[in-house]
Image (cartoon, rainbow, N blue to C red; front, side, top):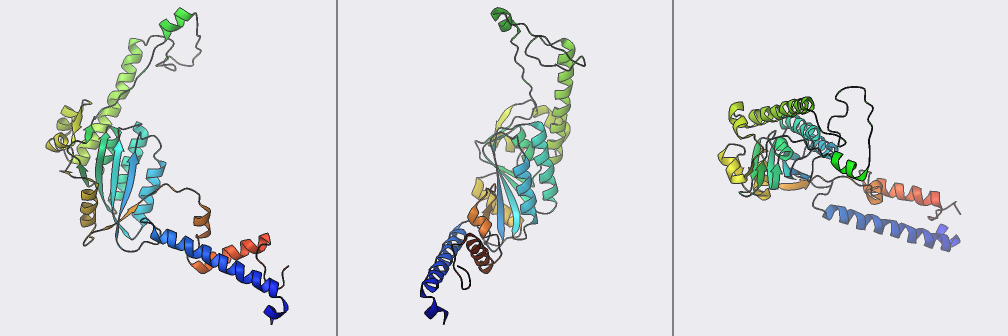
Length: 299
């Protein structure tokens, strides 16, 4: 009856409905076709990538929390390609890996480089795997300061510092460092270095004295590190994923889920509902509000 009385409105309704269904279908196919789709079923190995300088631990911490709570993720691989970074951020990731290890098996897979802070993170895992030529080790702490005092004198620049305490401007580039300041900073570095040594000794189940003997900042190849007990086996990422699957109790070849940093997406927002019907409801409501979708009783 409505189609006879309002043929134009009915035609618009049909076109709008077909368009909405087409958008939903294409979007669903796109997401279902992605390797790391949220619709993926089965038992998976989750992979978290740690790349570059370790400065902001929040994305890695978020990934660890998410994957350890996912029932379909049976084990986790930390893929590390990092020369190190800040002490605090490295320790935050290290502690979160330890928490996660109590719930799921974690394998560290070292890429081109996993040294200093990158290695610090790895020692918290259940198993460390590297390529024979991976650059690793570098167990140590470093602080560097520049001094421009002589340069400022040459160009006629004078600086004045007001401070509340004797050591408030330690490391200032405006003057030479005193012997007491050097002693203070060396004590700080030694303390942090000892924390690193203890973490390695605990993670690798090695005597502290044995770790201390090679914790002089030297870099090692993956092959050398294995001989020294700093890692467990040699292999690539696929080998690490396969091992993680076995440790997680997965039979056969495991599916892989790569944790990615979430970015805002309108399509993902619209697909936030658990069913396509819910998505259609959201699109319909939005269209009605904007006036682009015409339904009986609305002009």
